[in-house]
Amino acid sequence: MSQAKPSLYTSLSPALLHLYDLNNTVVVIIDVLRATSTIATALFNGARSVIPVDSVARCIELGKNIDSITAGERDGQIAEGLQYGNSPFEYPESFVKGKTLVLTTTNGTKLLHMALERGAGEIVTGSFPNLSAVCDYLVAAKKNVILGCAAWKDKVNLEDTLFAGAVIDRISEHFSINCDSSKLASTLYSAAKSDLYEFMKAQNASHYQRLTGFGLEKDIRYCLTPDGANILPFYANGKLTIHSW
Figure 1 (tube, rainbow, N blue to C red):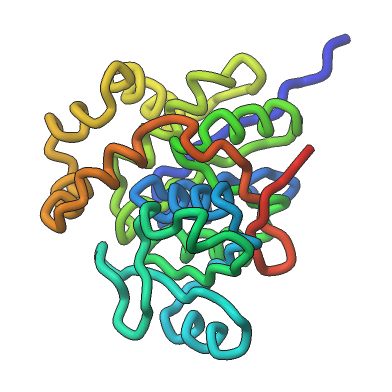
Figure 2: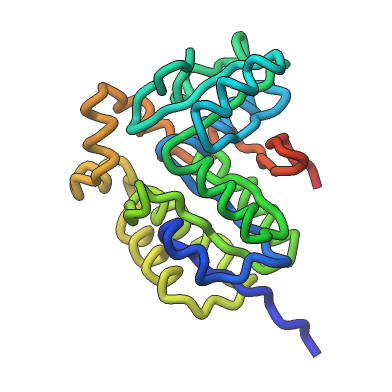
């Protein structure tokens, strides 16, 4: 008799996370524009670890206590009191290799801490730059999965939903999916996958507007492109490091 497939659910907003059982579950934190894209990029470029924190004050405090790069954003721009922001292009190998990055963002790092508080079995971070690594791990792990979209201040957004759809598109045959949120994400991705950037632009997506207004088209394009930093950030002992399995 074949073993039952693990389940997969999609939480489209942090405000919905409480509806899901996170115990013995791999929670994928998704904040495409830009936290999880930047986390994958920094680790891919040689950062020793990324410490995600949920407040600017905590970021500054940690930065004083350990030798690290303190970085983060609020509302898409570098947070007051921090030196660096949330753009993947701020963390080339020449800058970040061997260093610890302490990062706080409007949505992604907060969702990670919510998942921790709710007893997540495992936490990894996902973005298009590390899409394949995420999919490969979820299939290999054979555990229940929650795709957790960081969204924007609890409001559902297109890019995180699209990433959830991209994951589902690749791995659905390995999971039992009885979840309308996952069906929505999969349907949206099917409509968009030929050109994610143009889809975001044509839909006038809110985060596309926000970042384009700051002149960050380059960031958006990078963050919607698969496998530019194809490693798996895995959370343990207060930090994200590259996971090998």
